[in-house]
Image 1 (spheres, each protein chain N blue to C red):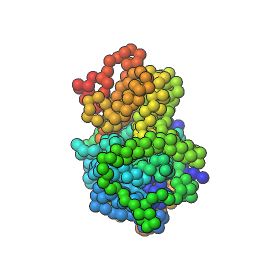
Image 2: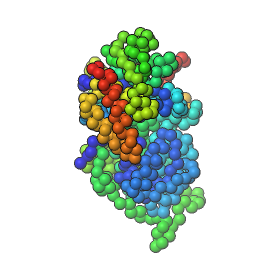
Image 3: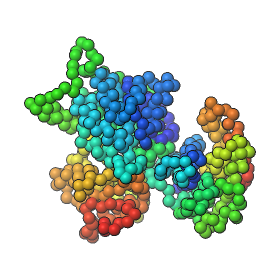
Length: 398
Length: 193
C-alpha cells in the first residue's frame, strides 16, 4: 500500500536510499545536494539502515571510493551537484568504462560562472558523454521513483553501467510537496539483492579492475560500452513497466502530455515540464492544440522514439536548460534535430535556452513560446533558430 | 479555499524562520488532505538578507514550479522590509497582507504603495516574548497566515501543530507550550478575519 506523505526532493531521495539500503555511500557535501548524505547519515546513526557511510575530503574522492567499493562487490552510491560533479569528471569515465553499476543522485545546479547556487542542467549535461545513464525527474515523486529503478537498470547483465538520477536543485530538492511512498518491503523486493558476477573481494576468482589496455583492445572496450548503452534502452523500459505494474505510476523514455493531436509541442526536461503542462491546459481551453513531451531518459538518447512522437505536429520548441557555446543550440536541441533529420521528420523547430542559473520559468513564458512557434508554423515568422527566453533584455536577440 | 487554491508569498530576513514557516504551513495544510507546495527562493545565503518563500495550497494536483508573482496573501515577517522590498507587488486586490509590527493596520497602509486590499498587523515580537520569552516571529506569523488565508479550521490547525511541535521538539519539550501559546495568542488577537 502506498502511503500519502509530503517531503522535499532531497528527503524523497534520502528516504529511497534508506529503503534500498545500499552497502556503501561515500559523499562530500555541496549545495543543494548536501541534505541527501546528511539525511542518510542520520538514518544510519538511528539504525534505520546499515549503509557504510564514508566521509571523504572531496568529490574526486567520493566517486573514487564509490568505484572502489562497487569494484569490491558492494552496492554503492554517492550524491553531488554542480562543481562537485565537475570534480568527479575523470572518475565518472572510469566508473562507466569499468562497467560499475553504481548510482549517483545528482541535484542539478549550474556550473560557474558567475558563481551561483541555483538550478540549471549544465552539470548533468557536462557529463553527458561520460557513459552514464541519465534519468531526469519533474518532481519529488519522480526523483523517488527513479531512484528505486536505478539499481535494477544498472545491475542488469545487458547493461552494467552507472546510473545518474537527476532532480532540479532547489526547485525540486528543497520544495515540500505531496508524495506517495511505498513500503520498505515492496521497495526492497523491487530492487532485489545485489549478486555481482565478478568482484575484487572474491578469493576464488582473482581479477583486475582498470588495468592499462593496449590499442589492440581498448577500442573494443569502448564499443562494448556503447553497445551496453544501446541495450540499456530496453532495460529501462522493462524496469519502468515493472515499476508501473507494481506501484501504478511512471513513464518509460518520456512522457507525452496531450501530444496525440497536438500541433505545437514543447520538448522539455525536469521541473519546468509541470509548468509547461499547466500552460498546455490553459491553451487547450482557448482551442490551441498544444502538448508537452517531457524527456525522462537523456542517456541513452531516444532519438528515433522522439522523432516518431513529434512527426505529426507542426512545430516543436526544444528547451535546453544549459548552454553548449556552439553557436546553434543546447545539447537537447542538437540531438533532437539529428533524430528528426535521420527520420526525415521535417517539422519547424526553434531551440530555446531557458532557466539558466535559476532564472524562473513561468506559465507565461511557456505561453510566449507556444505563441511564437505557432507564428513560425502558421505565418512563416522568421526567428533565430537559437533563442534565449526570459532574459532581462532581449537586445540583439529579436 | 476554492478549487484554484491559494498562493502565499513570505518576505523575511535570513535567519528569522520565514522559510521554516512556509515549510511548516505546507506540512500542516497537508494534514487537511490538500495538495501543498512550500519552497524558498535562495539568493546569497546570509543572516539578515531579504529572503522570499512561497506556498501553494490547492484541492487539485500542483504542477507549476515557478515562483509566485500574483499572490493571494503576503506575509511580511520583518517590518523593516517595507522600506526595502515592494512587498505588495502583484498582490491581488481581493487578497490580503499581514505585517509583523507593533503598529496598527491604518498606520501601515500608507507604507504599502497604495495597496487597496485588506491589511492586518500582528505584533509577533510582543506575542513571542510573552509566550516564549524569546523573539521567534515565525510561529505567530504562521498562525496569521492560516487564519487570514483561511487555509484550514483554526481548531484543527492548533491540534495538528501540537502534534507537530511534540515531534519537532521531542528533545526540547519545554518550548512546546510556549509555541502553542504564541499560536493561540495570535489567533485571539486577530479575531474574525
